[in-house]
Image (cartoon, rainbow, N blue to C red; front, side):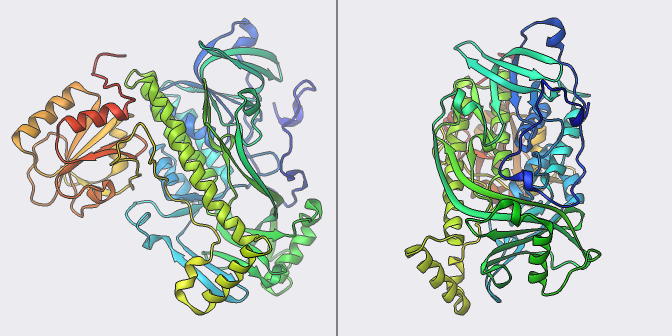
Length: 587
């Protein structure tokens, strides 16, 4: 059943954020069939361990991760396609940490083939270059086998996720995706949550142990759960133009703080998949979204930017859409049985690509914890650490992007004075270029307040390479996949006989997978061992000399230490919610 075939009792998905004014030749999006839920025939109110609400990039990433861990779940989406109604392009910049997650989920190769890799960015004020960077030279991105960023339209990734979920369902407990299923009511008690759902074929109800809200920034669960939110809304207005050129510009991120071809307002320029360029034009605060989105108006802007008349054969306008942004962060990301994930939990301005990337990283954080709890490997208290960790990350992202927003749309007075001074200095002096803020690019957040990490943990690793015992190349993601949702213990260097004996006991009695990491010339003392010829594993785990690092399934370090003893046992218990599970104790 297609969108146009929806019966009157099931209303079409509503436009948001001015996307009803979109223009251009458009993208062709996949459509998925509506299948009548079995509850409509049986009348049974079934109970599910996990119900995910929302099939955008966050909800689909969470579902795909759960499928990899062998945890079944139900995903409900009110639409029958990917992307947001009217906003098929949306997010495009996917950061290294997110790409590493997608590699674990089996999507990275498709994304890399389809998208465009980049690491260099240049910023201009007028005709002058006032800032530049190469993320490959930065420590946070330099070791990973994945590039700093890949640009690709969000709907492609969402489509890849749907296909991967369906493929995984052939061999593992599956994810039941129900298209055109809209939540109309919700309530929860100490035992379960109840969801009321409407579909094109009728209404039904179900129960859930855990509800994961990935329904976006207009989530009804905020009101249903009485979730408080800290919010800030500005008057900055933008217009996106996705354009395909016959002769395209350099494959770099170019930004203008004061673009002479855009009335001295800001402009962004990125290449993404299908040879389509994303160009974001900052508009006047009081602009008419319908007017600025008209194709002839956009073409006039393009002609001004490229200083010549671009004919239809030289420039195809694929998609145009206005947008405004706000910053929001829920004060708690867990309310009883409901977990808020992605845009339902936090909304940031788009500068630095911290929106969609943060949502995927939310999903990755929560997925392994749900899997560990449902499989009896961890205490239910572990789930509380999701809000602790990702709320801290959300606040960091809001703070960083708000600073950029104030630089790009400064208030009269001190903020405008600072920006003018920074740009003036940056034109003449290298030291001042770091003051030019057109977006601090997305990087993994640090968890400094988590009850699931020791003080030595809370930092992300990079997907570095190593050598297997048979001499073949490997990468950290291979070890995480091998651990299959369990904690991974990397022990560096030679072990004293007593330490080696304790490690064997620990490996036998706990659900922790242990690997000895050897430098050149060191002798293996454990059955599972790898060689760290260039020291990249040790560097990314931030272990110097002999010691150990306890890694979580989301590739974050839970703790590091020097000796295989009581501190390691305590770190394992902490990472599992203060519940050290022994093999065989829980199914």
